[in-house]
Length: 307
Image 1 (cartoon, one colour):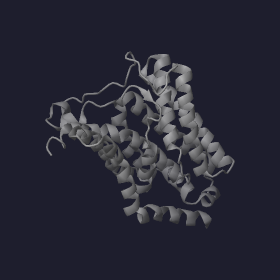
Image 2 (cartoon, helix red, strand yellow; image 1 turned 135 degrees about the vertical axis):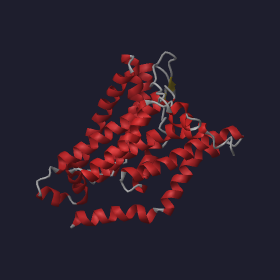
Image 3 (cartoon, one colour; image 1 turned 90 degrees about the vertical axis):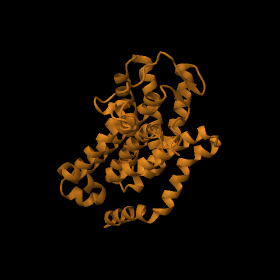
Image 4 (cartoon, rainbow, N blue to C red; image 1 turned 90 degrees about the horizontal axis):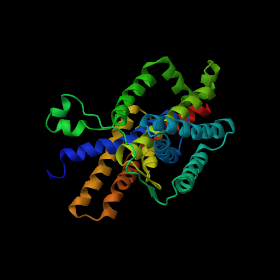
């Protein structure tokens, strides 16, 4: 047991949590303005691929991340325009984004890199690993917390920044009011559409960061469908956390820990097919046991909007 629950497991957990947490925070912002963004999976996948392309073109990690943000923001705008302006069902639009991302990244992988399945370059520059002074020298704690990419630390900082913004600022109250009752918000002079567009764009930025962490911060390569359902897990984390950044982080920690544990259990001669299923089994179990709590707020919001 000590070999299983060691510092390396929790160190890996922090890395596994990050893509899920960033995407879930983006989903929470969309939920707060009354949009159910099912396209998180596709946006993260596009972000992962765009980061690799940006790295390949510019040979600079920072520019690669900015490039990914621009590309994912474009697809986020497509989602926003079709859902908000054209009044299409956002679930259908989100699923379309997911299918588009899967096909587009597969096609682009062959068109740009002339490879199938995966792209890896030994000269590719990955995200740097930051060693935190003083903390890195603390036994066990230093092994867990220190030595991660900047996006890992940024993800946890954003949790508290978004929590403060949503619940402690006037702008945050206005954003939440758009999701609670858009008609009342409009009557008070709050620009509903502009607020929704802003939330979707911020969701795109967060999904781009999630994809960059996945392809440049963890493995420094891209493989077809490398998100492997993390966007859907992030969506569940958003629902379980009731779009509250702190609770979303708690849900993401659960799923990230199970993913890291599944990978670790492969070293104990357990079948890889079983260990790969662990995060999804926990996702289904969480949805089952917390279903009433998860959907209560959504039903309340729907009732408030209809009034």
